[in-house]
Image 1: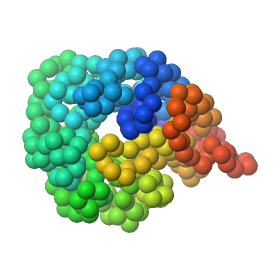
Image 2 (image 1 turned 30 degrees about the vertical axis):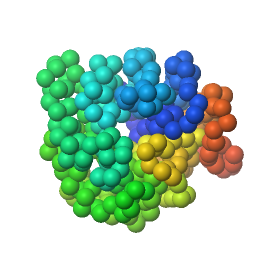
Image 3 (image 1 turned 180 degrees about the vertical axis):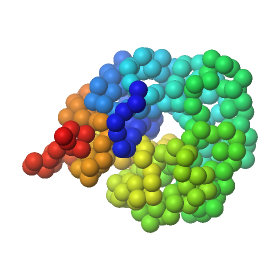
Length: 314
């Protein structure tokens, strides 16, 4: 279903938000959250990760969650995978998009998925080939996810040239889209603008590119603004700012979905997302948490007097 929007907001809470907290949501609890946020107009959600359930028990029901989520009208359902086994399971479950994630930082890639970057690129090619060999999966998108693009808590700075090398490697191996992640919240607006400008110069402006920011140092929305300037029109976020990476020391939550939608709508960019509906979805999510902190400013301050979201403007 084609939507009349300017910017696509992709909710990653059921994956990135839940993977790093102690509370393990039931499948029913996850689906209540997902359905409520889809009803608020969120067009895309990353609902699970096909990883070893012994490592991330929060994701053990990802196949069930994907299978139920793809039945929600108008919702694009994505899932994260680190390797071929995860991709096979994610494709079989029916996820519309499979995000194959790897880190630009060699050290973080080893810590996270126990592979070198080159091994991950080779594995990506094998996943694309597997999808292409199975006609029943021909409409499922394979996305190249690049973590630690702006720095790494293990190895420190990550040069832009390293990000471009991985991006080119993914495109050469059949990536249909790219996702650029500030996994540990190191990015600043100038760095963001420079990286995305170079990325579009490298892979072309026709390649769909998403951005994934954390708000570790309070620059999450500023980085969104810089990415918008560079041409990015898709952003990951999480209700209440949950999230992080179990293998990235110090990584804190994602940018807050409600705050992101408010900022975009306030400056005239249509997201198609209803802010009141988001707050209802947040309440559903919060009822299931067990003391984990949540974040956000819009929920406390509310809209300015006379505010009309761009999506509702005449």
